[in-house]
Image 1: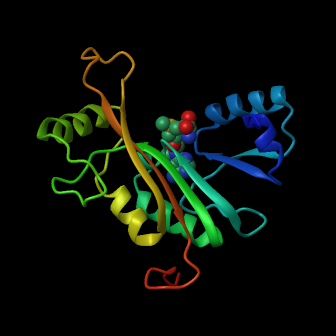
Image 2 (image 1 turned 120 degrees about the horizontal axis):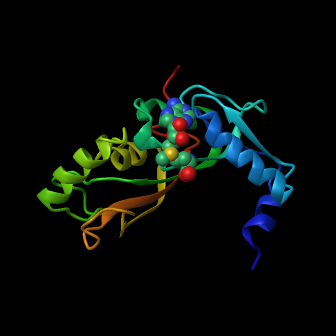
Image 3 (image 1 turned 60 degrees about the vertical axis):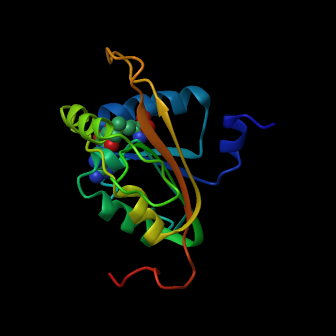
Length: 180
Ligand SMILES: C[S@@+](CC[C@H](N)C(=O)[O-])C[C@H]1O[C@@H](n2cnc3c(N)ncnc32)[C@H](O)[C@@H]1O
């Protein structure tokens, strides 16, 4: 099976976007060390940046939607820059709605109340609306949820829910891109 580096080399171009230059500097050093000539970092706002090629095949958000205040704009913008049939991938922490749809697990009152308060101290804003909004905007291909241990959190047995989402841009239909 091909490793990560081999898979990456199959892609024509990869842009790594962030508002934080120091974080991108670390990425630049790793890109250089690995010799990935097709990967470029960009200091820009994910709610507005458009690739020079105009459209993208894939857009991913790695633990970033919870740090983007206008996360719905970031999702709408991803929809805008994706080619028809293109994929969006998201991994992030989350809390479920009190009464989630059948595809999500129910969470306790303690989970839904405590984690948002804890994470907000670090300007990470957990939302119960990411998945419903992604599901509304895209054709859901995959939604899985799990729990992980938070480093340095004293109650090590109390794990944090996160989700992995993959959706496809519809070429037409009721949720196709709104006019901009
Ligand atoms: C928890 S970090 C995750 C970083 C990286 N994606 C990863 O997986 O390691 C969240 C990042 O989102 C970035 N961010 C917040 N708002 C943003 C925006 N509007 N556009 C681009 N990046 C943003 C922050 O600068 C921060 O580095």
